[in-house]
Length: 460
Image 1 (tube, rainbow, N blue to C red):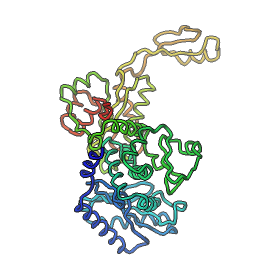
Image 2 (cartoon, rainbow, N blue to C red):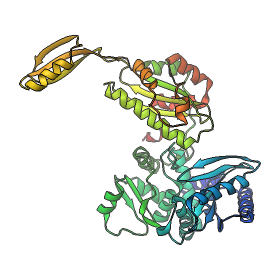
Image 3 (cartoon, helix red, strand yellow):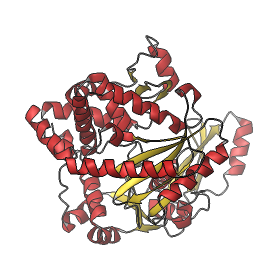
C-alpha cells in the first residue's frame, strides 16, 4: 500500500517549476488588484492552491477581493465586476454567477476567478455565501500538517479517478474542502477510506463537535446522507452537493480499493471503445431514446448541466406517467457543440388499448359522471369486480412518437440558455447514434461506458 501511494504521489504533486509559476502569477494578480483604485480593502488567494493541496496540472486560482461590510450589495457587485474586468483586460474572460456575479477567465494558461466578498469578523456576520471562504482557508491552514496535505492530494486524486470529485452539477460529488476536512478528521488517506467503507445513510462528521450529542437534531436539520458540519459555521453542511448515487460510489470504491489496491482507482482504466459491430448489436438489444440538442453558445457549463438534468427528469417522468417503463437515464455534453440525453425503456411500445377503471356500480353519482366522461371508447362499459370498466385507445403507444411530441411543447424548458436551442432537438435513430459514435470520440467513450453498464471498480 505504502509503495503504491508513494508512486501515485510522485505523479500528482506539482513540481518546483510549477509551484513557482503558480506563486508568481498569484502574486502578480494580487499586486495588480491592490493598485487598482476602488472600494476594496483586502485581496487574498484562497482554494487548494493557497493551501498547497492542489493536484498537478490543476491550474486554478481563486482570488478574493474583499469589501467593507457597510458597502451596499449593488455597489459591491458592480465594483467586484469592474475590478475583475480590469484584471482580465486583453485576456479571455466571462461573467459567471454563483450567489452573485463574478469574473473568471484565463491568463497564461491559468484559470482564474476574481470573486468579490465582504470582509467580516466571523461567519455569524457573513453577507454573501463566499464570505466564509477566507475562514475555511485559515482553518485548514492551521489544521493540515505537511504530510496531511499529501494525504489530501491522494484523496482528491482517488475521487477524481472514480469520477466523484467536485461540487458542480456535472458531477454532484465531493467538494475539495470536504476531502480536506475528511483528512483533518481521520488523519490519512487510508483512514478516510476505512471509515468511508463503513458509512451508512445519515453519516455525521462534526470535527469541532459543534452539535455535541445532538445526533437526531443534526439529522433532522440537514436531512442528508452525508453531513459534514462546516467547522466555521455549525448551521452548514459542506457536503450538501453530494448526490446519494455519488455517495454510494465513494463507499463502494473505498471497499474495493482496500480489498485490492490499484493505481486504476486514481487514474481510471483507459476506456476500450466498443467496436462498431458490438455497439450496433448492443443498441439493437436495448430500447433507447437518444435526444440530441445543440449546445447553447457561451453558456456556463454548471447552468447547462442543471437544465440538462432537469430536462432528462421531465422526459422520464412524462414517459412514466404514460405507462412506459424506464430502465435508466443518462446525460452527456462536450460543453461546446452537443448535448445528448439517453432514456432507456423496457420497450418502445405498449398496448394500444388501455383499460380504464371507474367507480363501483353502487356509487350512482360517480357512475353517471364516469359514463358521461368516457363516451369515446373502443370497448365497454362492463363490470369487473363490481366496478365499471371501459377500454380506450391511447393517444401514444410508441415512446419515440410521444417524446417527439413532448419536446415540441413550449414550456418544457422555460429558461435560457437551453430554451434557445431546444427547438432544434432531434431524436436519433440507431444508425444516427452509430454515425455520431464514429465522429466524436468523447461521445464514443460515454456510449461505450453506458452500453457496458459496468463500474470498473466493482470487480470484486
